[in-house]
Structures are given as C-alpha cells and as structure tokens.
Image 1 (tube, chains in turn brown, orange):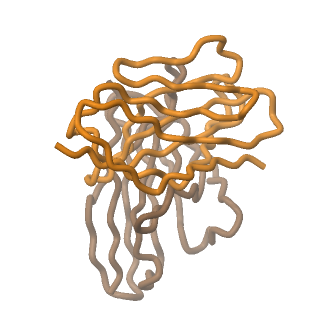
Image 2 (tube, rainbow over the protein chains, first blue to last red):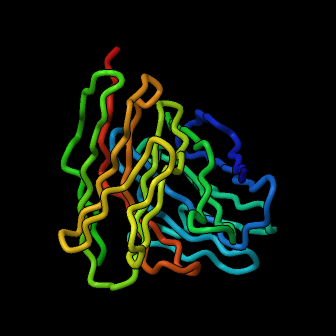
Image 3 (tube, rainbow over the protein chains, first blue to last red):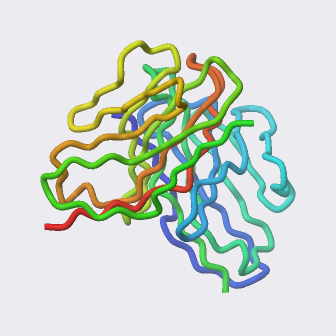
Length: 116
Length: 117
C-alpha cells in the first residue's frame, strides 16, 4: 500500500528557533500534499495545500510567513515553522494525494512539536 | 461551507459487540465524499471507509460498514464484532465532489472509542 513518512517524529526546540518537518511519499509520486495541525484532543485542521513546483495555498488564518512550505519534488514537501513559539506546539500531520480509487489521500505518521 | 458533526466525544463498548459511531454533515453541494479515519494513540490517520454521495449502496470494508442516510445527512460508522485493537479516536470527514480533483477534507471533532475486555 501507499506509504507516507514524516521526519522527525518528535522535536523539541527552543523558542525563537526554526524547525523543518519533512513529508515524503515513499512509493508513489504526489503532486499535491496537505499539511494539517492537530491540537491535543481536537480535530485536524487543514493548514495548507502544497503543490509541486508552485506556491502553497494557505487556509484562512494561517500565516504563510510563519509556516513556510516547499514542495520541491514529486515525493517531498517540507514545512518550516519559523521563529517557533510555545503556542506553535502541536501535532503536525501531512498527507499526500494519489491517483488511485476513491481514497486518494494517504496520511503520514505525524510530527509532535514542542516549543519550550 | 461544509460542516461535520460528531456528537459522541467518547464511547465504551464491550469486546465483541457491535458499535455505531455517529456522524452528520451539512453541505449544499450535491456531490461530496464521506470518509472515516481511525487515529490510534500513535497519531497516524488510518483510512477505514469511503462513501460517495451518488453511491446507491452503503459502503462496506471488512468489519466496517457505513450507514449512509442521505436524506438525514448522516454517515454513521458501524464496527461489527469489536476488538481491543479498535480502541482509538475515530474521525468522520467530508470532501467536496466525488471525483478526483478536490481533496480538501473537513474533519469532525472525533469520537474516542474504548473497547472493554
């Protein structure tokens, strides 16, 4: 089956630093990837849609200068949380779109970010 | 705007019993897709089942079935013969359109299911 990986799985950083999270589709090419954010005991909220070779599309209320997205290849999208603050601590999940059947979005295992 | 409502924050079910997780949705689009995902404590989102708005029959995938009642705008997930490994958060989600193209998903708030031995 389709596999999407994320790296790192957990990261702890100091306030003010930047953190990069990678999302890779391991056995298929993904022209579109999605980045979600999930606070504890809450649902997933779509942050942005990442398109290979073009600028990401951000959801309303998401700061594009704060959450930099780069989709440089058909198998890799990165999310960089710039100048992270404690309120950015969250669970970040990516998903990749694939041309297959009806279920066309495969999720990564997520990255837990803790900003001290 | 699309909206997904899951009214059960938590459920406790005896092992081997069937369980129904509720999901209602609101959309003005005639074409949409409904999904159920399972999220264990590890955090990954696991796809369970899909129902398209034009599908005549309820979707089934092994022990999972989706009770699709279009007029009532409900898409309840039924898990038959529950197992301890079914303990997890369950999310109902909807996307606009049934065909490949618009993949933005709107998620409900989830239901935490706990299976009791």
